[in-house]
Image (cartoon, rainbow, N blue to C red):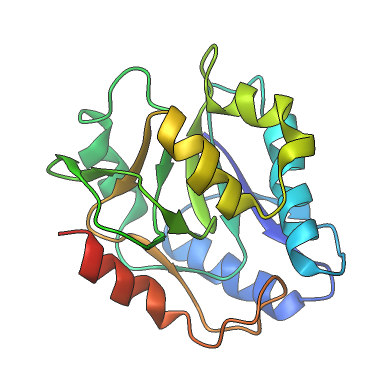
Length: 193
């Protein structure tokens, strides 16, 4: 599976961290040099869209941000969910910050509901799927995780892995004013039950 890690060149400490995480998981990922913008969420959005554009011919690909923190084994978790995903799945979030209760789909999957974050996503590129929709609606997208929550999750087969596989490490955010990434795990345990 083609994999990319999004990193701003002015944040080498984050790239070093991401490489350590990838090494522990025996994952290889190409580094995508993130767009540096003000506000930061523009660069985040444009970087995710550029990686999607690069991978639009791939059957499946992984996009990671450089502040990832794996809580379990990536390969084992993907093996567990592979038989549970429907053939027409669009995306598998390896972590997210749910904002409402999620519906259980199978032992290791929940249907995505309203949630924030885009730090670890496996995309499945299929005809008339989410990737095609996202790339044809680029001009409609402001904050990418808000677009996913409002447009993609309700219209496509999007899932959240269970248990939580990837959260974020506490770095200064380039995209928002959050003060504590522990809300990912707190919201996950509150709404994904």
